[in-house]
Image (cartoon, rainbow, N blue to C red; front, side, top):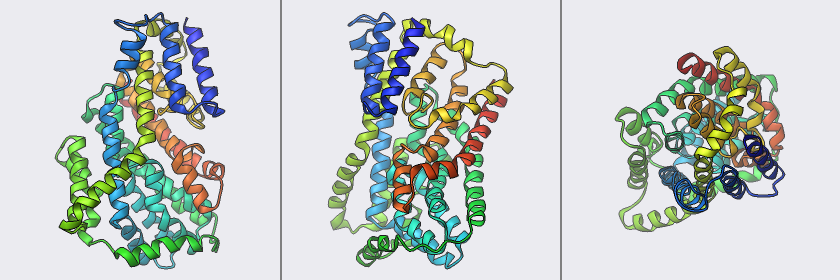
Length: 426
């Protein structure tokens, strides 16, 4: 049965890679197929309808709410001009010094990456940041990569990601936070190194193909003006509450929403802005929320007793237990998290993580190290991820060019995460 389940998983990966099925739909069909193969009854305990679908769909509800709040805060950062002001101030400070401008945009991208992820984060920092970098001579691929590396540097502090890994891997938030703090120095060092190396190695290229892209930021500035200096602290508010005061994730993010609103909006306009940005947040969050419903269903399927019993001997046979082999093998497997591959945690990788934990092959915190390290690669270099596609297209290059330029740096981040995992948890 284990071999049959693996073959079905391979078919699911093929369907996602060839875009025959959207990822969310493919994961649900895969989950139902795994449940039937594992001998689950249609109804009752450990069944397809009651356990996999009914209990699995809302399993990641807290993560979905966190994603919605992150999208809401991102919408407020955009509409109130906070994100644009941060980028403009950095660009004005950097002047015609390419490295300073790039490092400044990187810093803003990191801040934005702590609030929200995916394409909205890239747009918040990149709409102004990418044309500004290109205007001072930074190559287009480097400009797109700078935005992505910055978002990835902020990812260890992205509160919805904490909630996702906490719920999916059944780990307490302090455990997730503790590993993320260990991963952050690797992500930050790689991001800074990317800017310093790529801006010097590629030299200065004066390209004005994105000149027209600056029209939107200029008109927005004329309409809104710069946000107040104290409003620029908005991205930091949830972090201070969650890290410094250990406030729960959802209240911390709500506090960020309230702070952004109070520091930028007149009382008579608050009601309209609240509703407008919240409705806009639903549009942004809809796709990832559907994906998290599918992931919850898949996790419920792979944790069924029959599935665990079938997969345990096969997975155990190929899972290294020696810490050195652990680092070596999983470092070599990094490319499998690209192109929605089997180690992508927002796809089949979530199911594999569930199997590793349910079968007792690795402790849950070690699986956390694997999943978060692979996520650093996916978030930057996967040509199918929305933030990579948007950044590349906006800069006038292909996602594959961005992947080739950024992959060595994020591969090193993953290696660092694996080393910490092996040294600490194995």
